[in-house]
Length: 248
Ligand code: PGA
Image (cartoon, rainbow, N blue to C red; front, side):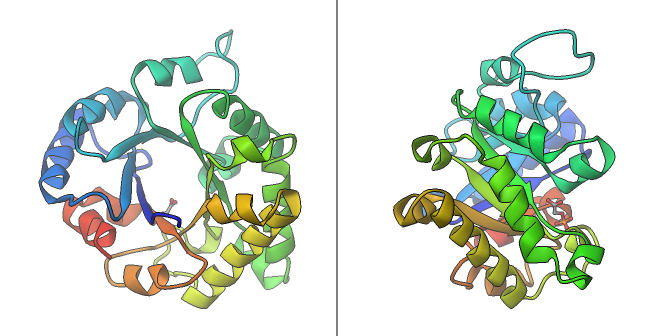
């Protein structure tokens, strides 16, 4: 049984003080156990969030990481640096990283391999853009991203990964994929996992949908058979909205 997983991606939002205030609000509201919840925050807020959320069961994630443990990579952050803060999760391959910061299928694979050697659990984002969807290439493109991300990774390691299907055209646009479109792609991703590994392994991997998820559409999305959770951008900035989604 996969436990539903709702994750907030703050992107480049909030100061540390604002993050602390947010954490104090949600920890009063979180009922725990039935749904896993995590906040993916900018690096500078991770310590404060870990401190505020200690003992609540709400996890904290980073939004990116370098695959090398150390080196001459100005401006980058490594896995040991995140581990030292007790960070629980790390996003990899978000479409904004692919689009603006040169993230590739190859670097996603290197980061996934490196994270799976650590205690930090990876959350890999995949998804097509509008032109690819309109050209009928969405399924093939997402399959390619998933295969590339998991290249050389064993089943034993792969099960610690969460996948988020985020169609680029639905991110921050208010235009959500229909629940059927999202479900179809999540089913396709699970089939790719079956072909890479086996049914048992694929059944364990949590697959989220992301793209304009809000308190109004969360229930409908979460009701879909193949969708195990949501990666929430804009609506995760508001503690009440975020918790309404967690309580879908
Ligand atoms: P959105 O962002 O919910 O604001 O569309 C989702 C994401 O980019 O993770």
